[in-house]
Structure formats: structure tokens, C-alpha cells
Image (cartoon, rainbow, N blue to C red):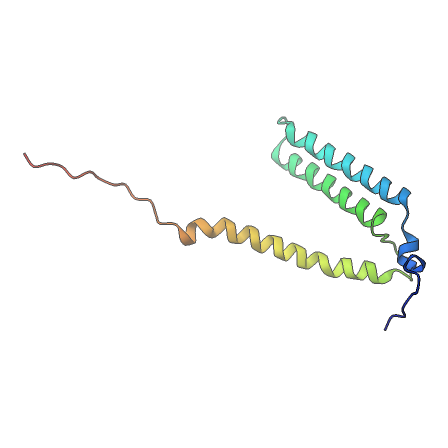
Length: 124
């Protein structure tokens, strides 16, 4: 069980953060997501290149947030942060994947099949 701290600012995780890291994290995230927005506005890329570029920029933004905001590193003292992130990523991927699959097949599972409707003819 963790010991209590009389001064919250003396907690090791609070002391690890700093204004410079938060500002650098914010700037890097805005820059990378701005670059991703510019890429999405361009329409002269092949689909595969487009997906790789946007995915790579999103991954770099997430990596910069993990390092600068959350203090994720490979030190022995903060190994629990790395382990918790590593164990959370598969759950996130499964959740997003199942949601995409569910909505992709929703139309087939719930909507009525469209059929051609023939108007009745009047007898003469």
C-alpha cells in the first residue's frame, strides 16, 4: 500500500512533470496533428501512402504525448507506466476493431433488403 504524502507537490510523479515538458508536448501534438490535417486535405496521394502517412503521424503524436505528458521512459523506477501502456494497447485495438466490424456489418444485419417494387397495373 502506498504511503501518504502530507504535501501533494512532494509526490515523485508530480515532481517529474514540468511546464516545459507540457508545453513541448502540446506543441509537438499540435504540429503533428496539423501535418496530418494537411495530408488529409491533399488528394494527390495513393490510398496506401495516405493511410501510412496519417497513421505514422498519429503514432508520432501519441508517442510524443506518452513521453512528454506521461513521462513514459524505460527506467526501472517508472516501469509500471510502460507495462500498463503495453497491456492497454491490445485492449484498445480490440475495442476499436470490434466497433469497426460491428458498424461495418450493421447494415447487413439490421436493414431490410431492398427489392424492386412493381406498381400494380390497372385492368382495362
